[in-house]
Length: 495
Image (cartoon, rainbow, N blue to C red):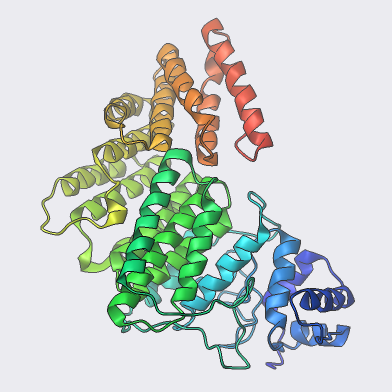
């Protein structure tokens, strides 16, 4: 017992709206349902957890995580509740700052346990699109400052197993304990192939349809990491975990589960670092930066990209640096910084064609010519909001991207159509804008990506100046109907 208030538990308790007596009764009921009928909690014990920082023994932390997850409609882990026995109990870095929603980094040896905990609680929700009150994103600067020192250290690779025989250890929440067992290179190869399948499905159909499958696979991999494999196998398994976590984060972002997505990006960075793959850790953080730009926070995205660049180290290939620069350029364009954007895109082009003796990792093989063009189009389209003359450049690059889109990544093609349509409306070419908007709309019905609807909403706003044109009024009505329907399914809404 620390004698200090557990601020994390107190904050979440306030959001849940229970009384202390009600929470005590719920703990007893939930514990019995989880196979612990002997557990008996009362109001005074709940008060000690919250006001005095007492950490209850297992299974109470798991029970509380399950109750708060269900009550708030978002993943709440044992760490979020301040019920892990390391450091000062319940005291979060930067207390009093609403941009710190729980741990963003954690002690060595906790990554696998945290991964199992978080994915288990995510799966327990058994529903999508529900983000409860109090679920907030960490600011890009807060995330960068929290993770900077951790990312720049270089600890030796150590198998990361939860301490299963320590009676004071809070076991991962959510599901029954995974029975750790050794696996070999063949099983890891199968896991690596499954990542490729999930990645292709996400690119074609959006993140909504397979998100739970990816989270479930990641949960299984977390359990596998509880067994101490030989270092070369453990390293590969960590890289699989990083790939799955990054994909789970991207899928969560794609369907609007933003705080959940950010936590998966952080998990991916941790897992990649555990596996000795610094560029992969940087790429996971670059996804968090893209998320920030999408949410209208480009300045915070630039903070994250600084960390992604520096944390990736000297191992990073030129093509990876090129991709990083395109994200920076999009952030700069979103802030109206045209000169900086053009300079950054020039660097991206030079790096993209630079020769390298090393083969690109699997997570970079989808960054092709059309993806570079697509990011250039998006950057110029964003800049056109400040400087309409940039719209012509956006049209040029979007057309080049669309000419090469033939590998089944339908979501990227939709984004290119929307970039072209938006640029055309800004360039005072409503006929071409309507044609490309129609092409995008035709393809969006079979896609589960909420982000495409968000981008469609932005384009819809640009049609307002042509509302009196009979050729555009029909399109506007069709778009509004589609956007209203998407809103009913959790997608975007018209302005």
